[in-house]
Image (spheres, rainbow, N blue to C red):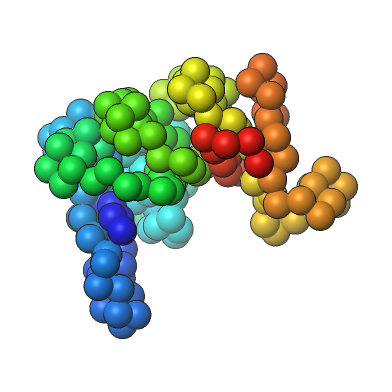
Length: 192
């Protein structure tokens, strides 16, 4: 199992949890995944570090004291694929707060050659020209033979309860544009 976490504080928690839970098969990297290798700026929202991103945050009224930036190492998924020759990857999860498309571009060869059966990525349909919406990503993988599914959101609301009923995922046609800000998409090599 490979995990990538650029935030030094969060990386320390990841490593500690790995040790406490005896996850000897976890290979943790204190780096960001991107479309180009090098040094990148990680923008950390100190109120919610889970919202950290390589994208500079839009002016959302967040007080400057709630934001900080750190320089981090950035690698591409293709670089790591060359270094570690992993071939039996079953699931890839990408949750990088609007930087998903850049991670995918940095792993173009990995996704083509390794073709993991399942890919999960977070939907970040923001009003931000730097962020590719889920439609672009879904169509990219549709051309590679993947089927797209919207994962049941949590916590559920009345609309999602009605849409999903007893299902965990809903199929998404390649021509459907989602009207949601956040969520998760499952890409599968097989029809579910």
